Image (cartoon, rainbow, N blue to C red):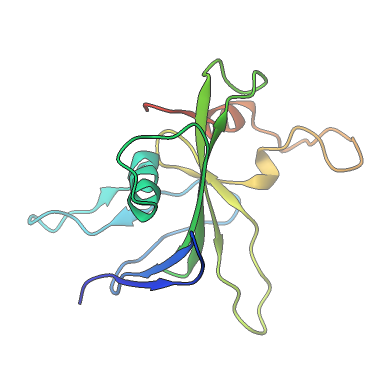
Length: 155
């Protein structure tokens, strides 16, 4: 069976692809593995794959200045956003971010948001914020990961 697409809103769609597995280790980056080519090997998913999927879902063949697209796949809610770059994280005029959060399971603790970096690693949001809500420094902040999850359009 191929992907199933269900409209759930004007610009949101849910895509379910049977047989895919996503590996995640809480607190550490992880790679999303997609089914491999004819050889049967696994190929890492990269941010561009998610950007292309978001553009496809919106029926676009060019990258716009702003975009927000959400969908559900493999027990995760994904979101791709394109917006102007923030000088605190990048020199690029326009960037995109790929995020995911595990879909809720009744009776179980939820998981936090994760963001993909340029190499396909998933980083928990707790490592990407320089300060906690009260303004205290975050000892788990990873400056490189924070920068690498703000991906210049064209990468």
